[in-house]
Image 1 (cartoon, rainbow, N blue to C red):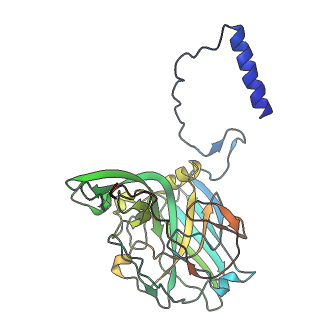
Image 2: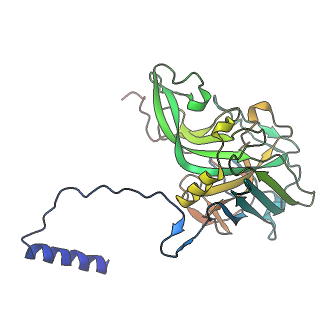
Image 3: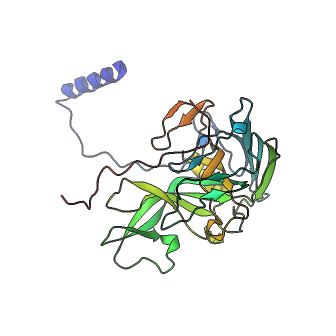
Length: 332
């Protein structure tokens, strides 16, 4: 602050010597550069090399969205429980490999929600019996928008542009909302003692999900513009077409742009019902991000993103987003 004050005083002195400070109009607009991931300070690619490379992602429990089930079973709460993943990618071989090791993976876990999480837009299972696990690779992290349509009269959400093949509905309002793009692996499980080592392969130019589709788009959206600050989950349904599948260049762009990527492991019914194909069941165990990684012993508030010391370990439902502060449709 003392340096800032000194510089300010210096500018004022110079200005007074020149007859006062004069503003020559607004400054020229800044043209943002395309992120490349290359540090001009360190003269290297800091987090991810282009085209070919590898990096590790520590996996921890506790990284879930509001309203989801946070899975922390006793086998995951042991002091020696741990998990990690590695991504290795090669553009020349057209290959991306996801490998992970777990020491603390629940075996054929069952869980029943007290309340159905389903919405008019997405159905979710209330109960999973003898479930298996599925990796979700979130390669594009809120760095692009999806258009959502709302009824112009009622202000209720109609749906995503990708769930409305007939195009924009009549008498609708188009709202762009930041979106995540996820793809998935086949189901897997470990051993009864909580150990697992898995390896999955994707194409570099097209990261298809376990159904051979383009994955899923996911956003936090208001279900009504009457309450624009009250959010819920929205997944596209049925799996995206392969033409919309992400490629690993887009994943690198997300890392270089400061958005990063995420991995999460969900508890899934086996077999998965048709309504759940190409999207996850919001019961989440191990997960992690790159390059930002939560330090061990801390948990993240899923609403505001703040870190705090972890004070408990146990499976539970994370509170939903807070209710709206305003209701634009309420009588004044």
